Length: 169
Image (tube, rainbow, N blue to C red):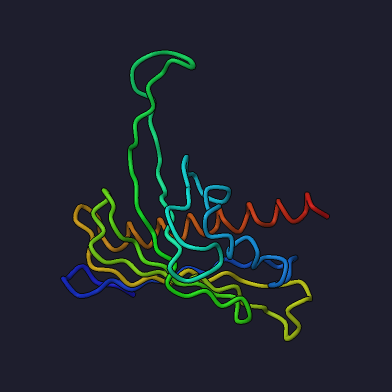
């Protein structure tokens, strides 16, 4: 689906959620500044904008412990990115965002996340999440590495959403 050349990389991952409806799953995807609840991030904060509206910018980061022990350990930022919500459509249940400033080598990265009902009635169980992306090649990465990361991360997102919904019921 992608190539190693200097052409844009395009990929898509799909995770099935057979027991939960699109209406149940969408609020977890829509909650842009709480993605750290679904993927292994240490920090996810709103930088500017209004929750649920295009233009919202979040800061996401992972950290590592530096010198010191216990509560005195120094926390250092390992990877970080500012991500801007470009489009959010709660009726069609999708959003699109772009990675802005970052230290991970992304020059241009735009992703779209969709929650699609697998039944005609979105209130009935069965849906899938699609995570598609288009980006410039990332220095130090192969397309397959990025695509595998997206697939692995999306499956983790689906698993956490399923668990959260079953706990809430």
